Length: 276
Image (tube, rainbow, N blue to C red):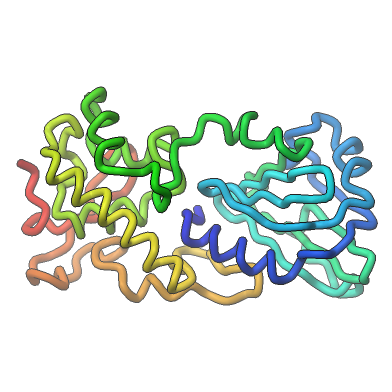
């Protein structure tokens, strides 16, 4: 699943490709993707004549800000957007088409059909599900050591489970949790309530630094992720533990191990990240 850096890269690309385009028509081949309104015909009718003014992001969600509406889109495992000429052949996995008045189309492709789209009146999107229960953005001023000290003191979960919880901090998924905890030298199975203030400060700093570096590199190409122009992210070349099971740690030379923590495959260096 694309995480915050990948979705931010997609956002920037889509903003470049779609701002100012007016929607002439919408075609929905797989109605189950449309979650709000319930009837996909209402979704289609509402979007006709709307112009894309900007593209935002909240955690792993894209938000297309239109003339009067906000379209909230989650890519889930395999969702991808691309802009194509209207006469270019449509891939069999393309499920939603936004046809623009300039003869181009924004196409949503999703092999596994897990993606979702919600349509709101502009201004209502952040106070409604699925966005209303999300925690602070990790690169915002709200995600601080003090905030995490407060949250971690109230839980009996391990630190990886907490960081994956989108109501605590939004947009950080499996890849970047593993990378951030390695850089902070914290074992993912550590009970969150056992962490010292200094350790929490390290985690917050490394989450911010890791995500900022990943965004700069265009995200990580893991499994089938590419951005909306077909370009791959390059941060995977800098990954220190994720996906490197059995390889030597780049810092100490010991072998990277793969565990299951919080129900997710988890990569650690047992030497650098001791479970105290």
